[in-house]
Length: 331
Image (cartoon, rainbow, N blue to C red):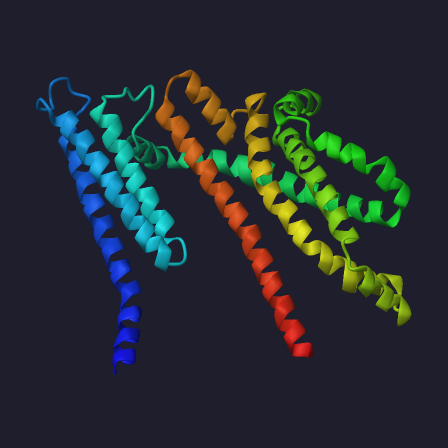
């Protein structure tokens, strides 16, 4: 009986820890919401009673401490995105309270509430800009650069002289800053979206080449010797041994390429565009000191980048699970 009671006690501890964590998160949310409420009309001079800002900052400090402890307790026993989403929500409320308590001008740092309002009010303009930046520039350039990189890597592995004569330059070109590359490409290919797609393709190309070559060359010598022993044709050996060995390297390059694609497209728009795109929107609104619009465009670009990365990571996980299932079925 004592052993069973001890086991039940140990099993109840995680549930108690999660409950305590959520209680701290709720307390943090209430403290931060109260802090925002105290300094809500911060734009009107004298609209906040004396001492409200100091009290709001104190509540923010307590709320952040309670939120950190609560999210830590929840994250220790909860899987998935829930802890990170809760932490993001609490952080946004805390920033809102701090900016309002210190009466920071919206032309310097806009509050998250203002950014959210602009996201809704300018949603059609931002979606149109996102279509140009992501669908036309980043995605087309990414697919073209990845495909060209894979084909070039296959040629490098097939013809050894290319590895000695071409691969060192691939590593060299991959270190060229996008800021130095973008104006040259825009001047050469014009202001249309194709010039930005070319910038993205170049930035994605070289990481894919280097990683795929290393992956194809990382195949186990023992497996290659076994294939030669059984007189397996070179093409089939390549498909059965080298390609599976290169997939982790390929997907690492593709995941890095998702971030490079968005960065390349936005930076390319800084040096010339036809009047559309998230980079153009950031540049033009920053010059007008409409920083709430700038932050709204940054939020849209960040969400697109995260979704793009998540899609590639999901494809990698699906491919890995299907390979594992097929290996089990063959046994």
